[in-house]
Length: 180
Image (cartoon, rainbow, N blue to C red; front, side):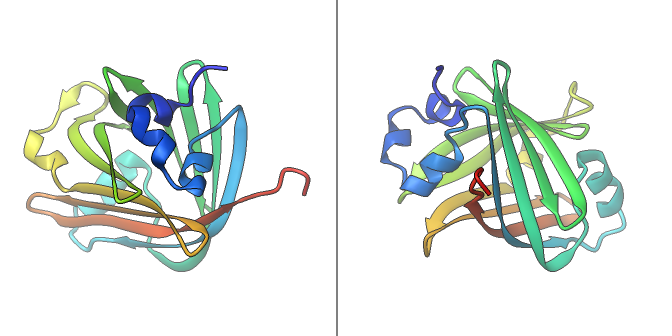
């Protein structure tokens, strides 16, 4: 078996992660995690078309969340469900960076481990896979993953210049027992 994607990107820091963070990022072939979450979209009129491009879910409070992780030779595919809204992405690595395609948007991240948490810092953003956005636009993409109170927790916040907040989604997940 090849090394998991996040182990490859994080290197030796991966082994020092809390158990649930290692588990969520050690996908042998397919695994599903479920929990609860919250989604908040910004209010600027350009938020809706931007969210459509990236296939981001609508605002909602306390909704069921499920993420199915699938590993393959080309990286990982994440199928997120926020209630009935689906948000799928493909992740892979190149030159020590994590890349993610989310709808018509591609992001390049540097991952760091700080106090047992994974922090994602966007360095680049492309629209339609080829049109680079100004580097300043990627600075307002902040992601954090951690283990807290026996659960895997995530928080993603995105803001854009002139538009302000685009989306914030957060919540917690636990692994689904494949035996049922």
